[in-house]
Amino acid sequence: MVTGKMTWQVTEASGGGLFLAVFDESDDCIYFHNYGEPGHTQGQLRQDVEALRAGDDTSDWDGNSETPQDDYDEFVEPYRESEFENTTSSEDNHIVADENGIYPGRMGCAAMDEFGVSHEEHGRHMRDDMDKIMPYPSVVAKADDGNSADDEGPK
Image 1 (cartoon, one colour):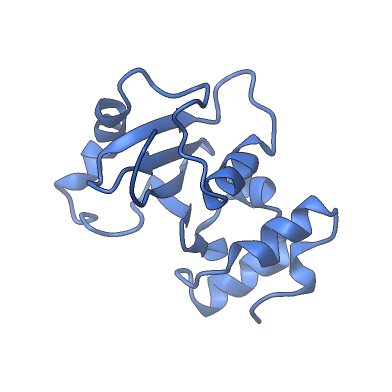
Image 2 (tube, one colour; image 1 turned 90 degrees about the horizontal axis):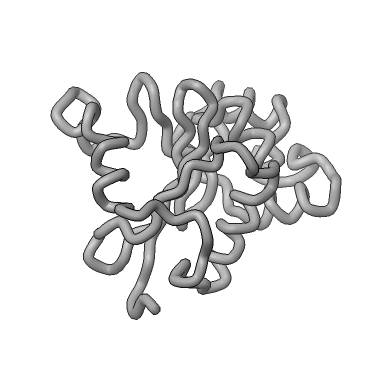
């Protein structure tokens, strides 16, 4: 069990893969999972993010990498020593959600589908501010009840 505050990020790779990295209070990656592997169903990542938001600590979750820190380091290494260092995206990978909310303007189709973001909502954020944060409840709650995420939220 993890004690202390955890942070996390959902990254969408250029090929549409979605990855969840969870960090402990020392910023060590304690959970790293590729949601593009066979056997995953749409909505699982969203459910896992909701569990994190509710305080779950991932210690008993299936699917964790055997070496989460090493796998996370390998995933981000090409960008650590580049012009993208300390940014939220690269040419290939974009952080589309974290513990603060979601970033519709950064999302590709896989993340839009997973978090229930409409093409209209995505387009608004692309025009206005790609880094604008949208709180989870306005998107995730709407996606769960079958309504469009575009009905409410920041405009």
